[in-house]
Image (cartoon, rainbow, N blue to C red; front, side):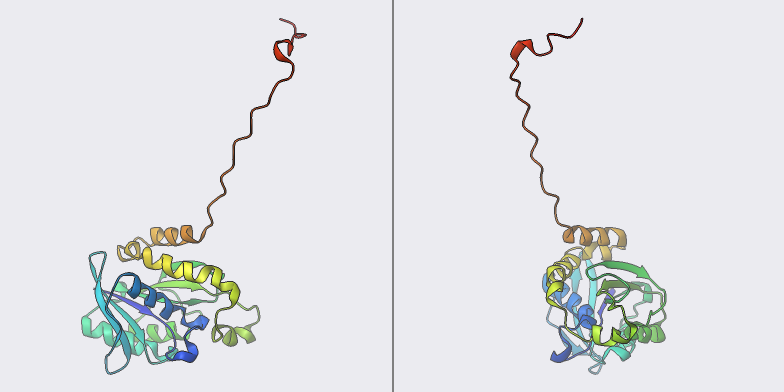
Amino acid sequence: MLLLVGLGNPGRDYARNRHNVGFMAVDVIVHRHDLPAFRARFQGLALVSEGVIAGEKVLVLKPTTYMNNSGQAVAAAAHFYKIPPDCIVVFHDELDLKAGKLRVKRGGGAAGHNGIRSIDAHIGADYRRVRIGVGHPGDPDRVLAHVLNDFGKDDAEWLDKLLEAQAVALPDLIAGNDAAFMSRVAAALTPPKPKTKPAPPESSTNGSTEGSGRGV
């Protein structure tokens, strides 16, 4: 079984925050792959949907503990289903990536992300992370406001496309082909190159006399 975790904060006030893009990602996955509606599990620590995607049994989880305590829900699910860290994938916002970029990595530090820090503390760091870029505001003092504010109008150009693309490409991620997953998402966000019409052939006005002065 594969455990897919989306990180975010529960409640309507946070629903469209940049910090909640992990929740958004797994919501689209559940919808795209016709999984059952989320329901409360693990003594209310999480909302869970369970089903099969690309022939693999998956558990999709959204912690309800607020970001700082995300690890509690992940640990509870991993322990109950005996899911090892290498079968866990966490979708979360990433300040160190430009808005609209997506990268997958295994392990590493938390880079200041409290949700990742909490998961690391409960199960270790040897799980995969789908890092969804939300951009950096440039000033460290503005980071909190940046991630806890809603996506802007400019983000609408890429956000829905990226969320849909990662749901469509999910079978590659499930199969462990992270490079193919990233490539398919990137291709979906790259505008097609405009087709260029061939230049019309040059017409000659000199008839058969063109070039008659050349030597032989």
